[in-house]
Length: 374
Image 1: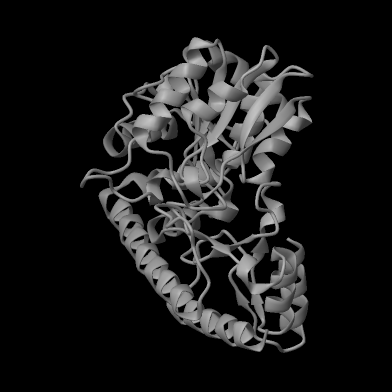
Image 2 (image 1 turned 135 degrees about the vertical axis):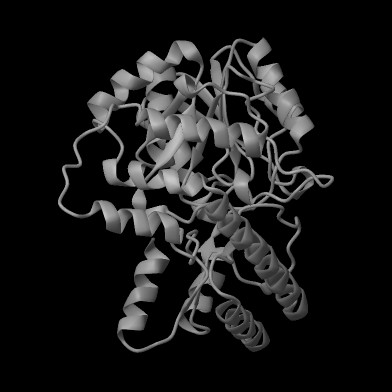
Protein backbone atom coordinates (compact mmCIF):
# COMPACT_ATOMS: atom_id res chain seq x y z
CA UNK A 1 0.00 0.00 0.00
CA UNK A 2 2.88 2.37 0.78
CA UNK A 3 4.45 1.82 -2.64
CA UNK A 4 1.04 2.31 -4.20
CA UNK A 5 0.64 5.61 -2.38
CA UNK A 6 4.07 6.82 -3.50
CA UNK A 7 3.37 5.72 -7.09
CA UNK A 8 0.09 7.64 -7.06
CA UNK A 9 1.88 10.77 -5.86
CA UNK A 10 4.43 10.45 -8.67
CA UNK A 11 1.68 10.01 -11.25
CA UNK A 12 -0.14 13.09 -9.93
CA UNK A 13 3.06 15.01 -10.72
CA UNK A 14 3.00 13.74 -14.30
CA UNK A 15 5.36 10.74 -14.01
CA UNK A 16 4.31 7.53 -15.73
CA UNK A 17 4.70 4.66 -13.24
CA UNK A 18 4.40 1.02 -14.29
CA UNK A 19 2.43 -0.50 -11.41
CA UNK A 20 3.49 -4.10 -10.92
CA UNK A 21 2.82 -4.03 -7.19
CA UNK A 22 -0.95 -4.52 -7.13
CA UNK A 23 -2.61 -7.95 -7.05
CA UNK A 24 -5.68 -6.89 -8.98
CA UNK A 25 -6.67 -8.06 -12.48
CA UNK A 26 -7.04 -5.18 -14.92
CA UNK A 27 -9.94 -6.78 -16.82
CA UNK A 28 -12.74 -5.59 -14.54
CA UNK A 29 -15.96 -7.47 -13.84
CA UNK A 30 -17.47 -9.63 -16.60
CA UNK A 31 -19.74 -7.77 -19.08
CA UNK A 32 -22.83 -9.81 -18.17
CA UNK A 33 -22.36 -9.00 -14.49
CA UNK A 34 -22.11 -5.27 -15.24
CA UNK A 35 -25.17 -5.41 -17.50
CA UNK A 36 -27.14 -7.01 -14.67
CA UNK A 37 -25.94 -4.36 -12.22
CA UNK A 38 -27.17 -1.63 -14.57
CA UNK A 39 -30.51 -3.37 -14.95
CA UNK A 40 -31.20 -3.69 -11.23
CA UNK A 41 -29.98 -0.15 -10.49
CA UNK A 42 -33.41 1.19 -11.40
CA UNK A 43 -34.57 2.26 -7.97
CA UNK A 44 -35.99 -1.10 -6.94
CA UNK A 45 -35.54 -2.05 -3.28
CA UNK A 46 -32.35 -3.98 -2.58
CA UNK A 47 -32.98 -5.15 0.99
CA UNK A 48 -30.75 -7.28 3.19
CA UNK A 49 -30.52 -10.91 2.21
CA UNK A 50 -29.99 -13.78 4.61
CA UNK A 51 -26.61 -13.66 6.32
CA UNK A 52 -25.45 -16.77 4.43
CA UNK A 53 -26.36 -15.30 1.03
CA UNK A 54 -29.27 -15.86 -1.34
CA UNK A 55 -30.33 -19.48 -1.90
CA UNK A 56 -29.93 -19.02 -5.66
CA UNK A 57 -26.33 -17.86 -5.39
CA UNK A 58 -25.39 -20.56 -2.88
CA UNK A 59 -26.76 -23.19 -5.25
CA UNK A 60 -24.95 -21.66 -8.23
CA UNK A 61 -21.64 -21.67 -6.32
CA UNK A 62 -22.15 -25.30 -5.30
CA UNK A 63 -22.80 -26.30 -8.92
CA UNK A 64 -19.78 -24.32 -10.14
CA UNK A 65 -17.59 -26.03 -7.53
CA UNK A 66 -18.86 -29.44 -8.62
CA UNK A 67 -18.45 -28.76 -12.33
CA UNK A 68 -15.11 -26.93 -12.34
CA UNK A 69 -13.21 -28.03 -9.24
CA UNK A 70 -14.46 -31.59 -8.76
CA UNK A 71 -16.07 -30.67 -5.42
CA UNK A 72 -19.33 -32.51 -4.68
CA UNK A 73 -20.85 -30.12 -2.14
CA UNK A 74 -24.35 -29.20 -1.02
CA UNK A 75 -25.56 -25.62 -1.31
CA UNK A 76 -26.41 -25.67 2.39
CA UNK A 77 -22.67 -25.72 3.18
CA UNK A 78 -21.92 -22.62 1.09
CA UNK A 79 -21.53 -19.35 3.01
CA UNK A 80 -21.51 -16.26 0.77
CA UNK A 81 -19.39 -13.50 2.29
CA UNK A 82 -18.31 -9.89 1.82
CA UNK A 83 -15.19 -10.85 -0.06
CA UNK A 84 -12.94 -13.78 0.78
CA UNK A 85 -11.54 -11.68 3.62
CA UNK A 86 -14.86 -11.92 5.45
CA UNK A 87 -14.87 -15.69 4.92
CA UNK A 88 -11.45 -15.91 6.57
CA UNK A 89 -12.62 -13.68 9.42
CA UNK A 90 -15.65 -15.91 10.03
CA UNK A 91 -13.47 -19.03 10.00
CA UNK A 92 -10.94 -17.55 12.42
CA UNK A 93 -13.65 -16.25 14.74
CA UNK A 94 -15.29 -19.68 14.83
CA UNK A 95 -12.14 -21.74 15.32
CA UNK A 96 -9.58 -19.74 17.32
CA UNK A 97 -9.34 -19.22 21.06
CA UNK A 98 -6.73 -16.87 22.55
CA UNK A 99 -3.37 -18.60 22.81
CA UNK A 100 -4.03 -21.21 20.13
CA UNK A 101 -1.04 -21.87 17.93
CA UNK A 102 -1.71 -21.64 14.20
CA UNK A 103 0.77 -22.74 11.51
CA UNK A 104 1.21 -20.58 8.40
CA UNK A 105 3.74 -20.66 5.56
CA UNK A 106 6.47 -18.04 5.34
CA UNK A 107 6.19 -16.27 2.92
CA UNK A 108 2.40 -15.86 2.72
CA UNK A 109 -0.33 -13.27 2.33
CA UNK A 110 -0.04 -11.07 5.43
CA UNK A 111 -3.75 -10.50 6.04
CA UNK A 112 -4.38 -14.22 6.56
CA UNK A 113 -2.14 -14.33 9.60
CA UNK A 114 -3.50 -10.96 10.75
CA UNK A 115 -7.01 -12.41 10.83
CA UNK A 116 -5.79 -15.23 13.05
CA UNK A 117 -3.86 -12.89 15.32
CA UNK A 118 -6.89 -10.65 15.71
CA UNK A 119 -8.70 -13.48 17.50
CA UNK A 120 -5.77 -14.17 19.80
CA UNK A 121 -3.85 -16.81 17.87
CA UNK A 122 -0.14 -17.29 18.27
CA UNK A 123 0.74 -17.43 14.58
CA UNK A 124 3.84 -19.48 13.88
CA UNK A 125 5.50 -18.87 10.53
CA UNK A 126 7.12 -21.95 8.99
CA UNK A 127 10.01 -21.10 6.60
CA UNK A 128 9.52 -22.71 3.20
CA UNK A 129 11.89 -21.45 0.49
CA UNK A 130 12.47 -22.43 -3.16
CA UNK A 131 13.23 -26.07 -2.32
CA UNK A 132 9.62 -26.43 -1.15
CA UNK A 133 8.19 -24.19 -3.86
CA UNK A 134 7.47 -21.68 -1.06
CA UNK A 135 4.72 -24.00 0.20
CA UNK A 136 4.00 -26.06 3.28
CA UNK A 137 4.18 -29.85 3.08
CA UNK A 138 3.09 -32.69 5.33
CA UNK A 139 6.54 -33.28 6.83
CA UNK A 140 7.13 -29.60 7.62
CA UNK A 141 3.76 -29.31 9.36
CA UNK A 142 4.22 -32.58 11.26
CA UNK A 143 7.67 -31.53 12.48
CA UNK A 144 6.31 -28.16 13.67
CA UNK A 145 3.21 -29.52 15.45
CA UNK A 146 3.10 -29.06 19.22
CA UNK A 147 0.55 -29.66 21.94
CA UNK A 148 -0.52 -26.02 21.57
CA UNK A 149 -1.12 -26.26 17.82
CA UNK A 150 -4.79 -26.12 16.86
CA UNK A 151 -4.78 -25.70 13.10
CA UNK A 152 -3.12 -24.72 9.84
CA UNK A 153 -3.84 -22.06 7.20
CA UNK A 154 -2.88 -23.10 3.66
CA UNK A 155 -3.05 -21.11 0.41
CA UNK A 156 -2.61 -22.90 -2.91
CA UNK A 157 -1.90 -21.23 -5.32
CA UNK A 158 -0.27 -18.70 -3.06
CA UNK A 159 0.26 -14.98 -2.86
CA UNK A 160 3.07 -13.76 -3.16
CA UNK A 161 4.78 -16.57 -5.06
CA UNK A 162 2.11 -17.84 -7.47
CA UNK A 163 3.10 -21.41 -6.60
CA UNK A 164 0.89 -24.36 -5.66
CA UNK A 165 1.18 -27.49 -3.58
CA UNK A 166 0.73 -30.64 -5.59
CA UNK A 167 -2.71 -32.08 -4.97
CA UNK A 168 -1.23 -35.25 -3.48
CA UNK A 169 0.92 -33.23 -1.07
CA UNK A 170 -2.04 -31.07 -0.09
CA UNK A 171 -4.13 -34.18 0.61
CA UNK A 172 -1.35 -35.71 2.69
CA UNK A 173 -0.97 -32.49 4.69
CA UNK A 174 -4.64 -31.97 5.53
CA UNK A 175 -5.14 -35.64 6.39
CA UNK A 176 -2.20 -35.57 8.79
CA UNK A 177 -3.57 -32.41 10.44
CA UNK A 178 -7.03 -33.98 10.69
CA UNK A 179 -5.53 -37.09 12.31
CA UNK A 180 -3.98 -34.80 14.94
CA UNK A 181 -7.37 -33.24 15.67
CA UNK A 182 -6.47 -29.95 14.01
CA UNK A 183 -8.61 -27.74 11.82
CA UNK A 184 -7.72 -26.77 8.25
CA UNK A 185 -8.43 -23.48 6.49
CA UNK A 186 -7.56 -23.81 2.80
CA UNK A 187 -7.47 -20.62 0.74
CA UNK A 188 -8.36 -21.44 -2.89
CA UNK A 189 -8.86 -17.86 -4.02
CA UNK A 190 -6.48 -18.36 -6.97
CA UNK A 191 -7.49 -21.94 -7.80
CA UNK A 192 -9.43 -20.87 -10.88
CA UNK A 193 -6.21 -19.33 -12.25
CA UNK A 194 -4.04 -22.38 -11.59
CA UNK A 195 -2.50 -24.31 -14.47
CA UNK A 196 -3.99 -27.58 -15.62
CA UNK A 197 -2.25 -30.68 -14.30
CA UNK A 198 -1.76 -33.54 -16.77
CA UNK A 199 -4.43 -32.00 -18.97
CA UNK A 200 -6.96 -31.77 -16.13
CA UNK A 201 -8.26 -28.56 -14.52
CA UNK A 202 -7.18 -27.83 -10.94
CA UNK A 203 -9.06 -29.69 -8.20
CA UNK A 204 -10.36 -28.41 -4.90
CA UNK A 205 -9.41 -30.12 -1.67
CA UNK A 206 -13.08 -30.37 -0.64
CA UNK A 207 -13.61 -33.81 -2.15
CA UNK A 208 -10.65 -35.21 -0.18
CA UNK A 209 -11.25 -33.25 3.03
CA UNK A 210 -14.95 -32.45 3.45
CA UNK A 211 -14.33 -31.21 7.01
CA UNK A 212 -11.96 -28.45 5.91
CA UNK A 213 -13.02 -24.82 5.63
CA UNK A 214 -12.34 -23.88 2.01
CA UNK A 215 -12.36 -20.22 0.95
CA UNK A 216 -12.82 -18.78 -2.54
CA UNK A 217 -13.68 -15.47 -4.16
CA UNK A 218 -15.20 -13.69 -7.14
CA UNK A 219 -12.26 -11.25 -7.10
CA UNK A 220 -9.56 -13.09 -9.03
CA UNK A 221 -11.01 -15.59 -11.54
CA UNK A 222 -13.97 -13.31 -12.29
CA UNK A 223 -12.06 -10.02 -11.80
CA UNK A 224 -14.60 -8.54 -9.37
CA UNK A 225 -12.26 -7.13 -6.70
CA UNK A 226 -14.21 -4.01 -5.75
CA UNK A 227 -17.59 -5.74 -5.63
CA UNK A 228 -16.55 -7.54 -2.44
CA UNK A 229 -18.03 -10.99 -2.85
CA UNK A 230 -16.55 -14.31 -1.78
CA UNK A 231 -17.59 -17.59 -0.24
CA UNK A 232 -16.57 -20.41 2.05
CA UNK A 233 -17.55 -24.06 2.07
CA UNK A 234 -17.82 -25.17 5.69
CA UNK A 235 -18.66 -28.42 7.47
CA UNK A 236 -22.37 -28.90 8.16
CA UNK A 237 -21.95 -28.37 11.90
CA UNK A 238 -20.34 -24.95 11.31
CA UNK A 239 -23.11 -23.46 9.14
CA UNK A 240 -25.16 -22.15 12.05
CA UNK A 241 -22.08 -20.72 13.73
CA UNK A 242 -21.06 -18.91 10.54
CA UNK A 243 -24.57 -17.54 10.15
CA UNK A 244 -24.62 -16.02 13.65
CA UNK A 245 -21.17 -14.52 13.21
CA UNK A 246 -22.05 -13.03 9.82
CA UNK A 247 -25.28 -11.52 11.23
CA UNK A 248 -23.24 -9.72 13.87
CA UNK A 249 -20.19 -8.80 11.80
CA UNK A 250 -21.74 -7.44 8.57
CA UNK A 251 -25.45 -8.50 8.40
CA UNK A 252 -25.18 -9.91 4.87
CA UNK A 253 -23.07 -9.72 1.69
CA UNK A 254 -23.90 -6.89 -0.78
CA UNK A 255 -27.35 -7.58 -2.22
CA UNK A 256 -26.79 -6.09 -5.69
CA UNK A 257 -23.51 -7.96 -6.15
CA UNK A 258 -25.18 -11.23 -5.13
CA UNK A 259 -28.02 -10.83 -7.63
CA UNK A 260 -25.68 -9.92 -10.49
CA UNK A 261 -23.14 -12.61 -9.58
CA UNK A 262 -25.53 -15.26 -10.89
CA UNK A 263 -24.45 -14.07 -14.35
CA UNK A 264 -20.91 -15.29 -13.60
CA UNK A 265 -21.95 -18.90 -13.91
CA UNK A 266 -23.43 -18.79 -17.40
CA UNK A 267 -21.42 -20.57 -20.13
CA UNK A 268 -20.64 -17.25 -21.83
CA UNK A 269 -19.21 -15.64 -18.71
CA UNK A 270 -17.20 -18.71 -17.73
CA UNK A 271 -15.76 -18.65 -21.27
CA UNK A 272 -14.77 -15.00 -20.78
CA UNK A 273 -13.05 -15.87 -17.49
CA UNK A 274 -11.20 -18.78 -19.12
CA UNK A 275 -10.03 -16.51 -21.93
CA UNK A 276 -8.68 -14.06 -19.35
CA UNK A 277 -6.93 -16.95 -17.61
CA UNK A 278 -5.17 -17.73 -20.88
CA UNK A 279 -4.18 -14.07 -21.27
CA UNK A 280 -2.62 -14.13 -17.79
CA UNK A 281 -0.57 -17.18 -18.76
CA UNK A 282 0.72 -15.36 -21.83
CA UNK A 283 1.63 -12.39 -19.67
CA UNK A 284 3.51 -14.71 -17.35
CA UNK A 285 5.66 -15.91 -20.25
CA UNK A 286 6.37 -12.31 -21.25
CA UNK A 287 7.52 -11.53 -17.71
CA UNK A 288 9.58 -14.69 -17.25
CA UNK A 289 11.31 -14.21 -20.61
CA UNK A 290 11.98 -10.57 -19.86
CA UNK A 291 13.36 -11.19 -16.37
CA UNK A 292 15.63 -13.91 -17.72
CA UNK A 293 16.89 -11.56 -20.41
CA UNK A 294 17.81 -8.79 -17.95
CA UNK A 295 19.33 -11.21 -15.43
CA UNK A 296 16.81 -11.31 -12.60
CA UNK A 297 16.29 -14.94 -11.52
CA UNK A 298 12.95 -16.51 -10.59
CA UNK A 299 13.89 -19.58 -8.48
CA UNK A 300 10.44 -21.19 -8.71
CA UNK A 301 8.29 -20.84 -11.83
CA UNK A 302 4.74 -19.94 -10.75
CA UNK A 303 1.84 -22.16 -11.79
CA UNK A 304 -1.10 -20.03 -10.71
CA UNK A 305 -2.35 -16.59 -9.66
CA UNK A 306 -0.53 -13.68 -11.35
CA UNK A 307 2.64 -13.22 -9.34
CA UNK A 308 6.35 -13.85 -9.83
CA UNK A 309 8.66 -13.97 -6.80
CA UNK A 310 11.94 -12.50 -8.02
CA UNK A 311 15.32 -13.03 -6.37
CA UNK A 312 17.15 -9.69 -6.19
CA UNK A 313 19.89 -10.80 -3.79
CA UNK A 314 22.45 -10.72 -6.59
CA UNK A 315 21.96 -7.01 -7.23
CA UNK A 316 23.81 -5.92 -4.10
CA UNK A 317 20.62 -4.32 -2.79
CA UNK A 318 18.12 -5.52 -0.23
CA UNK A 319 14.60 -6.10 -1.51
CA UNK A 320 13.46 -2.87 0.12
CA UNK A 321 16.33 -0.93 -1.42
CA UNK A 322 15.64 -2.50 -4.80
CA UNK A 323 11.94 -1.53 -4.62
CA UNK A 324 12.88 2.01 -3.63
CA UNK A 325 15.32 2.29 -6.54
CA UNK A 326 12.84 0.72 -8.95
CA UNK A 327 10.21 3.27 -8.00
CA UNK A 328 12.32 6.42 -7.77
CA UNK A 329 14.77 5.74 -10.61
CA UNK A 330 12.97 3.36 -13.00
CA UNK A 331 9.41 4.40 -12.14
CA UNK A 332 8.31 0.80 -11.61
CA UNK A 333 6.30 -0.12 -8.50
CA UNK A 334 7.04 -3.53 -6.93
CA UNK A 335 6.44 -5.07 -3.49
CA UNK A 336 9.30 -6.11 -1.15
CA UNK A 337 9.37 -9.54 0.43
CA UNK A 338 9.10 -8.18 3.97
CA UNK A 339 5.38 -7.70 3.34
CA UNK A 340 4.97 -11.47 3.28
CA UNK A 341 7.06 -12.78 6.15
CA UNK A 342 10.57 -13.14 7.49
CA UNK A 343 12.13 -15.91 5.37
CA UNK A 344 13.97 -14.31 2.44
CA UNK A 345 12.29 -11.01 3.24
CA UNK A 346 15.17 -8.95 1.88
CA UNK A 347 16.05 -11.31 -0.97
CA UNK A 348 12.78 -11.31 -2.92
CA UNK A 349 10.33 -8.90 -4.48
CA UNK A 350 6.85 -9.69 -5.75
CA UNK A 351 5.97 -8.69 -9.28
CA UNK A 352 2.31 -8.78 -10.30
CA UNK A 353 1.59 -9.37 -13.99
CA UNK A 354 -2.08 -8.44 -13.68
CA UNK A 355 -1.60 -5.51 -16.07
CA UNK A 356 -1.44 -5.49 -19.88
CA UNK A 357 1.51 -6.72 -21.95
CA UNK A 358 2.61 -3.28 -23.12
CA UNK A 359 3.01 -2.08 -19.54
CA UNK A 360 4.78 -5.30 -18.59
CA UNK A 361 7.23 -4.87 -21.46
CA UNK A 362 7.96 -1.26 -20.52
CA UNK A 363 8.39 -2.23 -16.88
CA UNK A 364 10.88 -4.99 -17.67
CA UNK A 365 12.86 -2.67 -19.95
CA UNK A 366 13.05 -0.05 -17.21
CA UNK A 367 14.20 -2.64 -14.65
CA UNK A 368 16.88 -3.75 -17.12
CA UNK A 369 18.12 -0.18 -17.41
CA UNK A 370 18.14 0.10 -13.61
CA UNK A 371 20.25 -3.06 -13.31
CA UNK A 372 22.69 -1.65 -15.85
CA UNK A 373 23.13 1.47 -13.74
CA UNK A 374 23.89 -0.33 -10.47
